[in-house]
Image 1 (tube, rainbow, N blue to C red):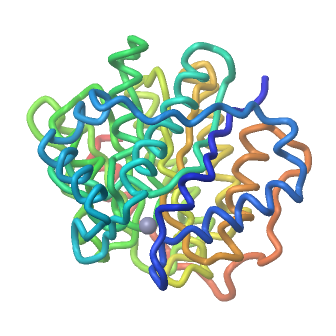
Image 2 (cartoon, rainbow, N blue to C red):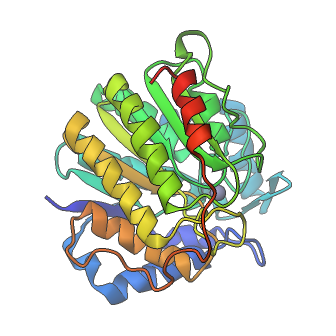
Image 3 (tube, rainbow, N blue to C red):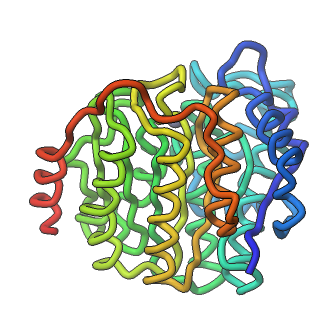
Length: 342
Ligand SMILES: [Zn+2]
């Protein structure tokens, strides 16, 4: 079985000069994928604009209308970091819609897994506003769509972007049908994601945060996945795993201070595939979030696609591991295991 891929060049039109989240992130990535030849072996799915009711399943209708109106008037800002240009409305619909197409391909059994190479990213977008470069909560929209349109019961969302996925967390805070697992540098933007943020009401225990000190690398991340994510996932028994694939935890990323390598990202994706194989028929859908080093990001995406596709070419990592030793997080992981009774 092949791997589904969504990519729409219209997403390049949502861009802003000298902003870290600009069209070059996708352009460079696409160029490497074309040069590599992997595109020939993937199942290309069409990015259609996400239906408004799929978006209002997680966002408040007034915000959706506000965003459309702002773009129609030529643009503006939904928060100090988050620009809107004339093309942003359509780009945001296509970003969420591209992920929905990949999710549909996986949930109809057309393919086992897939990747949505989309932007603007989504995991900071809150129910009532865009935030942190994000306009719509793409991964949250996909989780609800899976439940409403495909009868999926339990969705596990894994977010390895270096920033805490506060928007995704907020959307499922009291919901036991969507478990949100986050690894992120902490304290750091956006400020949320502390250890004791574990959900509320019926959703208590269905939010799992791994707030990392700076300097955590391949070993620490893998330990977090094996010691915390794996037992959490086995207890939860998801029907689908979604991945908020942010590549800004790479050691060369300009926005943060973690030490993952491209190869390390590949290992994390393989761990997720192992869990998906064990728990939910291999159903795993990834969507692009952050990643701001323009040299590194394309190799992270290529490596992820090769892992998903079980391509023998394997890792594409010209940069190697981070120099120096990584921060030990064994005490942190022990505390998290106690907190979540693992
Ligand atoms: Zn990020």
